[in-house]
Length: 349
Image (cartoon, rainbow, N blue to C red; front, top):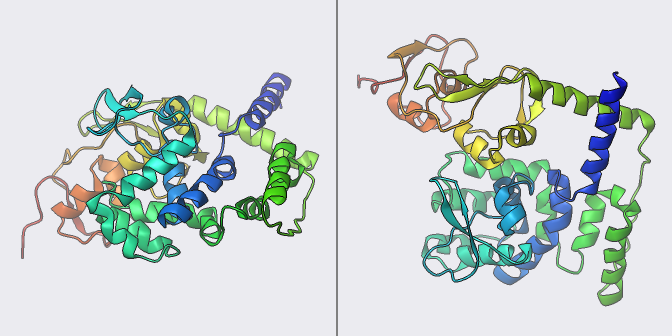
């Protein structure tokens, strides 16, 4: 490996560890206690709150989170009298709330759900049933992405956030420690645990800790260099369907890295591309703006193994529109050779 590149990678790692919000895991470690506190006060599953925070902020990397402590993208609305900031989301320069502390954002999110009539049915659900809550949020109109519920569930199950639904504010640090035993060597975190012991009921937790080996460190360095080279090689193109900006992913890479490269939030990239995961694969198509509502050709024959999402990305059409044009239920997949309508609606038989 080139020595300069290797040195740069080591410097990158050092910076990575020095910052708090570089990964979803670090976001969870920092903000899980807030989610559990809110669960105790408002009966909203901590897993749901935490998954929404992760998704909305891109693991804490969004401009709203970093500059405005706004972790849930809550806009000003007519009843907000606090600080504000302008941010382009669904429209240019929209007004968003600014908080003095992230904890205020978490509580405001709870109030947003608890005191609005659209979400009243959510509070009839079991606060340990994160799947019903996820689908309930989508049904109540919390998000426009048709896969929003599944995206939340994916986050919750990937990071085992449901463990926090079983915790309380006195034991949440121990739950974090069980999930991330490497924190046993983190002096700041363990100081918090000791403080919790002194003020609450101590819980004995035995956690195995495996020292990071040089080989693992070397592998991480090589991964960072590979990702850096992958990102450098990506070129923005104009799609034949309406000139929409898109890229073709040359190798496996995390969506968070693409978000940082193009200056677009991870949540917006997921929304525009109707993604249900945060990892992009080789040859994936990623749109950098919202797709079109119609295709540039009339019809297309589905190939073997192609999904509706594959066709949606290939022709730059929103999946919701694609399903509607073909009179198919959302989630239904085409058969090989099936004629897919891209402009007008499929004729009724």
